[in-house]
Image (tube, rainbow, N blue to C red; front, side, top):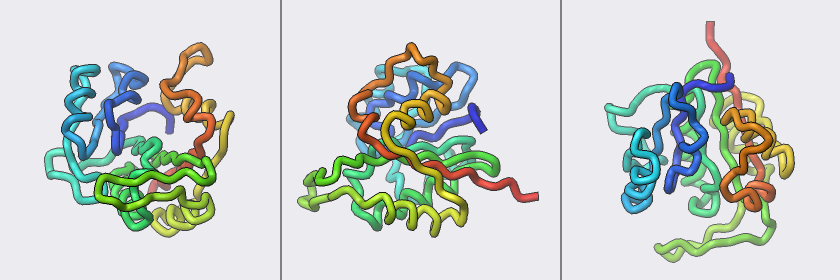
Length: 183
C-alpha cells in the first residue's frame, strides 16, 4: 500500500513530515520534547506527541496507521529496546499496511548514549530474525541506492527531490514488512 496515514516513530525534528502531502495523516512520535518543539516549529500543521515509542501509546493516539516508520533510530536503542519498538510499530500497522524501519550499516559504527550505554549496529541478519519473530511475515530489505528509490516510492518523491541527509541514507539498510489483510 502506497500512501495513506503515517506514524513516524522517533521522528526527531520531523524531517519526514516534509514529504507527507496535505491529504495524508501524519503523526510524529518522539521521547525528546526539545526535538518535538523544533518539529512543531517546522511543521505546525502536523501532529507531534511525546511518547516512549517502545511502550503502549496513550488512548488518544492508539490507532492503526497505513505506514509505521522508524528512520535511523538503531544507534539509539539496544537490541531489547529495538525489539520493543518493532512490536509497537507492528501493533499500530493496519492490515494491508506496512512497517518500514531503517538502520545504519556502517560496520563499526557505535554511539554512547547519555546513560553511558554503548550501542553498536546490529547485524542485518539479527534485525531480519527479530522482525520475522515479531511480525510473522516475510521481511524485505535492501541496501544503498535502492534505498533511495524505496523512500521515493513511500513518500511519493520525484527523482528531482533531494532527501534530507542523502549521504546517510545511501549507507542505510531499509527493512519493510507488509501486514496481511485477514479475511
